[in-house]
Image (cartoon, rainbow, N blue to C red; front, side, top):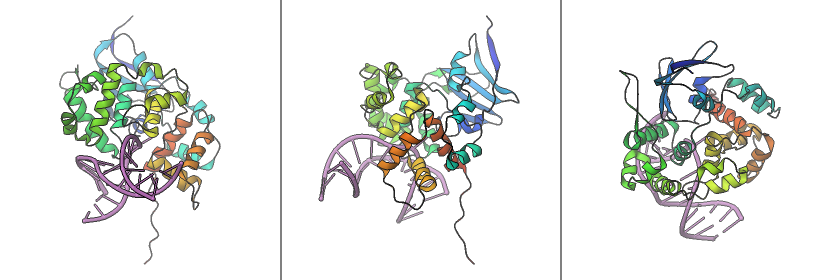
Length: 292
DNA sequence: GCCCAGGTGAAGC
DNA sequence: GCTTCACATGGG
């Protein structure tokens, strides 16, 4: 057994930048070629290399399984893409976002992050979460000359905060939702560790018991934090993708689109959702017809 | 100033 | 049952 500060994971078809900036996670900061974040309470620096991903931590570790799991390195992306329906819309999105992956985040952090996400832009979500971690999270060891870093605050840590203190993190009307949910989770009233073993519909229902958690946020948490690859969050961007790309010039009600989403994309629907989401957000804007 | 952002919950028909 | 609205905050 060896204790190391760094390692190199061999992996193909992994676009680290797309993965860390595709709105599934809000804590990673780019520093030149490097990405700096906190995973499982450890400061981590990642960099894409020619053959894989290089990782460095602040204190020696003897295992890297926590990071392998987080990065989902054992997922065979070809298999995922092979499970997709062969429709031109999704094919276009996959081609445009080659190497986009899903992470397996820590459940509480993921759930809390998406409670803070409603009707906010991604840059704002990042800002709120950054403040929340600085104010309520435990400091983590960082290498010398690196700026301080903080773990995401536990449910118990958030539960001890006041609503006013949370509002001071610029989370606005989401503060009472986060606080109430943190208390329920910290009390064990909603045991997050049992949710991964439930069938998807029951898992959705369990999370939707929590204040501030509706279908969309439940699906995000289940997909990005609880390992449900079939969860398919429908937000304004994905709704736009379904309406504009799959059913252009037709008036389809949201409920029908929801049904289409639940039946069209197969066992890895969540991956498909992420490709559509990232594709909609990154594709060049279609220029409005301009006449002289 | 206006509209929108990885929505939800409650009130109104 | 559905549709409408309030809720903070900041970017474009």
